[in-house]
Length: 299
Image 1 (tube, rainbow, N blue to C red):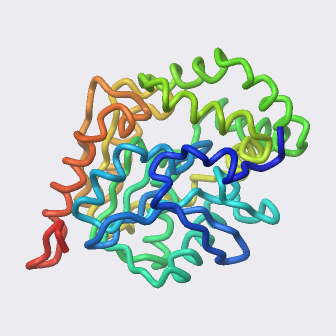
Image 2: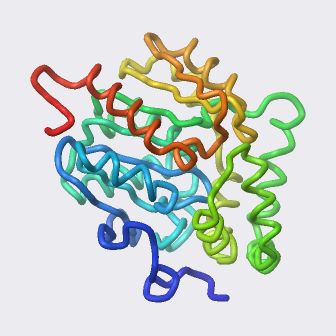
Image 3: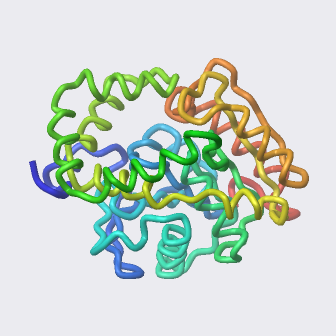
């Protein structure tokens, strides 16, 4: 059990492997997937996931967009030298460095869970200027009450030692642990997806990055800034989301002028993995609403 995933071994059957490449930017060695042609669509996964999360959605979107989907810092096959990028501002700055290195300007950006928060932070800080933003079960609201006071300190305690990550990775050898975590999201993930999540969960480096990201995550400033967001925002909420309550999407809608929510009542936190065709259709419809005159999904 190594500290980091090895592409030649752990990526041997990685979804959409032919679209993968490695880029150095901002002091980080990035793994990303780049597929399709057309307006650039930047996809960011959530905490603890990787590009495998887009395995079925990205190829569908690539029929009309150039899709760029990186593994976030420390996640999957993206290597970091330290934990400085594992906060919301740090993540936003890191992804900005990657976008600059690639020489692209995302026309549309879509993020799942914490990935949505990163994209909104980047847009507010004028690091990207997409025509529209899509939040898929976006984690945009800070914990409230007792949870708000206890979650971050506990996460910092767990992330403060590599022993915790190693212990979790060792326990993840039991497939029941990973299956239980996935079930708690309210989503039904097929065996291929479950195996890929298990591969990530059994790697101490990936687990440490996820824990450190949670330990350093502060959504208070983002929530306070949401009324300043002038970019059109589509919030997709899974009605059975066991990770981010769907009410949070409605709370965000009420803070962002012109934002709207689509609630998919039978789907959970990993809605884009459960129904990729339905999510792709919503993204494409939204693009038609926000695209500049004359533009199409074909460019």
